[in-house]
Image (cartoon, rainbow, N blue to C red):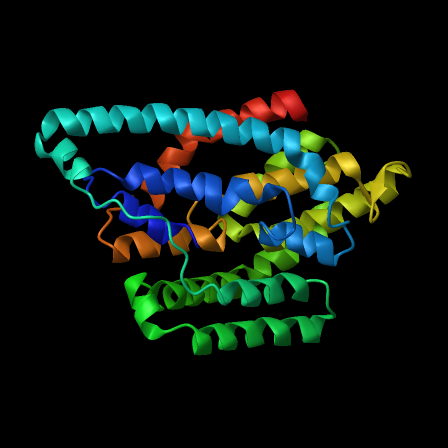
Amino acid sequence: MVLIRPMLRANRTRKRVSHIFIFFIFLVSNIGGLLTPLGDPPLFLGFLRGVPFVWTMKLFPIWIFTVLILLVIFFLFDSYMVRKEARNSSSFLEAVDEMPHKKVEIKGKINFVFLLMVIGSLFLPQILRELVMLSAVALSIYFTSVALREENAFTYHPIIEVAILFAGIFVTIAPVMKILSMSGSELSITKPWQFFWITGILSSFLDNAPTYLIFFSSAQNVADTLGIVENLIVGVPEIYLRAISVGAVLMGANTYIGNGPNFMVKAICEENNVDMPSFFGYMLWSLIFLIPLFLLITLIFF
């Protein structure tokens, strides 16, 4: 979320930019968060369940493999779009050249203190953790000038929109999650690639955080049933945990509702007059660019 508005400003002279923010959702809102519990809600829930904080660094090979491929695809696609726009509009390159050149400047540096408060709160007991987070929010609002937020085009509308949407999602998926939690161990899932895909597919539509917890518990039950006692992380075979973690984080990018930041990016972009694809239009992008990559990940890593 920190990067979305600078990205919007950097591309304000271009007409065709929706693909930039689709790949932003792929890479920044989802896949980029695979390496620490701070990066994505499912991994944070795993950390709260006892998964070591640094364990997710073991996912680096999958992370770098996925990120590099998507960056190359984005570079090639965006280069094509720039050339196409330059051919169709003689004023395009002139507008780029006339953009004011400003030094990179960070204002509101006091917010780094509040950010550290949020990070540090992750290691506190539950009630105290939430109190520290809320305190950081209140202090940020108090110490950051309204003018600075206006200069950054910050509004609460996308936050409110996403909060309402996901409140509805969590209420309506509660019965589904209850059914899965009761019968998850009866799905005959015993292979890492099965955990990867079932976690990923359901994460795409039921939100990846609760889905992660369902199959985290399911993997513990499978380990008990099969008598697996080696290479366990909080009772979960490490290969299963790797598949569940990667599936939840990566395939959370498949739809707007797979992960909260996805819809947040969409809402912020549309607030800034960027035409984003519809729900199914976005899914078409993920089917074209992500699903083949996930199949490749399955063959190589699972």
